[in-house]
Length: 449
Image 1 (cartoon, helix red, strand yellow):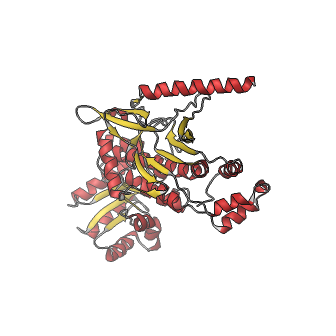
Image 2: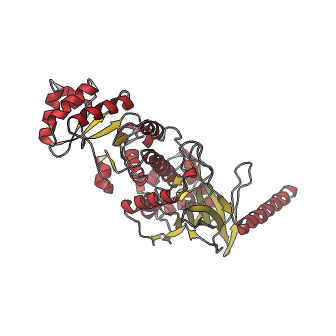
Image 3: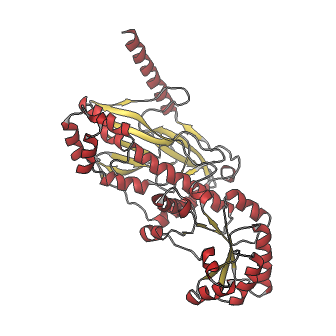
């Protein structure tokens, strides 16, 4: 994955190398602002970040490809020799996966020689942006389902096979209880679920024959797709399978009306145990409306809308230089352009709770400040070596569910949630002002000269 970078990461690296710039530098990865109708985000993707940093290498083929690119024509051979032995030797601090995060809070903080810290930017942003976005979307769908199960059905609509696996992972962290993606089950241990497609029913001469044939092979897990031709007639045929029937799935039509009619058919036949599964372009808004109107649906299969986060498909995560070590002294760095001002220096985030144990507010401060509350950023890598136990995905999911339960309801509303309080400590604000004044003085002197 060494070449999974934007080209300018490598052109900067070559220029840093040529100019002898090796400053140990700290970059923060954070979200500038929440998308509309989002009151929180669920941090996800750290495990993939760690695997990337630990295994990052440039192969001889990678180096040959770069050497042959015209833009590197005047770059010295010494730079390519440097890449040949490249390893990430830096430190990584991070907010653990499953924690809730808010604007301007460093999700990752990377401290490493400038070339190392710069080269990893693209991959880190890509992984954190996507998984955090999907985990958050999934959590909203799960909240809308009010305790009813939600399954990830999105692999075929994700932006590629790898995205499907990462979406399954993020969806599980966000509260889904399973996925249709078998590879995600194999590699990540996520429960896998699935039944049949309409093509199965259409392959047989009659719908009833397709039901009987499927039940014969899977007598302990018979969930039938009943909307291939006529949902109500499909339900009437499904009950003939008898008490072994576990569920029926409706994938189209008026889900409110159809689920009510199907429930009535099932109950009147003494099959109250049979679950109704709904799917078909569902999202949190549609699910909330269905349940608000009393739809007797037990499980939801959600795909496209969740794995693409269709209503808000991007996050504004950025990766910004905040400090450089010059001769053993940390020199703060910040950006001053309009609407994109950053806070300088290494940081910590404290989370404070109210008397009920609910989230009250977060405070972003300088790394060496001591405040009340729980610290969020933890040491993950030191000197390029993992020093943090990566938790199993079930524990990450449990953390996310606990945190969501502790977040007051006004920040979890599907539409127009309140803004969660994120404060800056007095020490950080003063440090920002001092740094800004120093930068402006330096720039004025340079212009005069």
